[in-house]
Length: 362
Ligand code: UDP
Image (cartoon, rainbow, N blue to C red):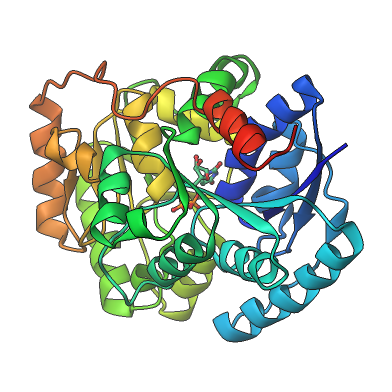
């Protein structure tokens, strides 16, 4: 049986990989070995997703928790290479834009193993973001690129990818499948609303974790000010990423927002389904808001998911507290057609089909 190695390491990758892994197990046409780099390791940032989403237990856990990007990526490269030598797979699959993505793609590329990149072609056009650099390099050294949106496909074309001999597929966004598959399970299993005394439609959900926001005391303070202003009108609940928690303490910041520990995927989907609106700097949350028919305020200066802004589902406010409150007031009155299909259908099946046929896994 042919074999792929899937590299994961960070929370959003567990969620995306779960969609494809389920199809691989169901079809049973080739084998999947999961490698966890260890980038996210807390129980509520990692293990809970494997349990809730039935992700295959990683055969390898590389246990890499460096904080510097170079050291982290370097160690991953070295350890992933060793795994690839041992496993000798027919292809490597990487997701998104983290250091685990880049290290996985680079290790495979150097061994002439085919690489498939899921969530290819996204660009923020902000080269100071570590994720932007990871994406561009990963795209360029992959053999097969799965674009979540037409915009992502256009980005690749304008960078000349048509001429690189790479197989490029407009697959749609794999997170759409995750939300449709797990939403009902989340509704039935999560007790998060009762736990924190939250009433449907009576709270705003916020998440902040991007390094450009958390590591700058002024930006982080402004974001918390914006959220505090919103919380004068409605309860704001924020599952706190470990990095954000650390920085709030370090910068001695305070907030009226209800801060809770990071939640599992079921709890997150339940919060999304019942909140009034979302404020976030997360890429995944922007689309999950849309899939749950919720408007989204983006605490960044740009987004890779431009179609959400162009069609009035989301607004970019950066770290300006005034703009954040204005956006909240704007969306309270806004009516949007959330039925619009921006992210494709049967995305997991499409990716599976192309992986199998183009990478010769059958
Ligand atoms: N998420 C979660 N629990 C949380 C925060 C986020 O399950 O406490 C999920 C969220 O629903 C989304 C993914 O994690 O599917 C997004 O991850 P993150 O925001 O860390 O990364 P990004 O999407 O920005 O790459």
